[in-house]
Length: 246
Image 1 (cartoon, rainbow, N blue to C red):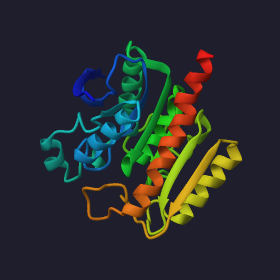
Image 2: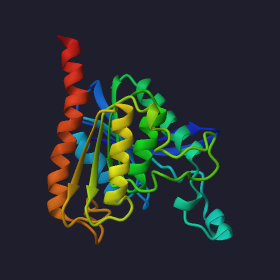
Image 3: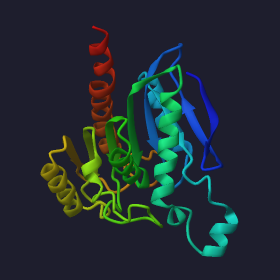
């Protein structure tokens, strides 16, 4: 199972992308993996590797690629706090364009998943890029907030009308961002808009319950949610391709 790092040009900047792909020549369905607050670290790379084992080309763009240590020091903000929704959208779009132009990728079978801030990015990506066929956010917080200077000046929730694909959202019942009240707001808005979605809440789980490298890992929630995610992507990415071949 090969893995490698590629660099893509986004708005004149080099953006590293970690990629993990199945063995063989493909073409493969693909999944964009949106990082959590720690960046494209051991946990995010392990998610890409697990998806590759399931037959997907999985890629994780480094959304922090514009942010230098000097910017962090001079601003007094974290890297996450320096992110900008318009730039996030540009990074995701560049990743999708690269995938769609790659001969080893099934250009019409691309999904997106993400964790923590990556869960928010997953929702934002699905709302602003029409090429995603499935989106699976994990405990995405701040969906009712705008990050940085945004061209739309709208929150991801306010952009939900642009979602073109099914959504599978995983929540922890102890989490406060997103809370269970937030979950009900998300559900209400997606229902109002007629968007296909399914939500799961895991008892005893807080934020970051999937991260096996962190202190908030909850094995029962991780073990229950992952097969649901794999089944979801299989239905909307692999099954669609199999149907097209018949």
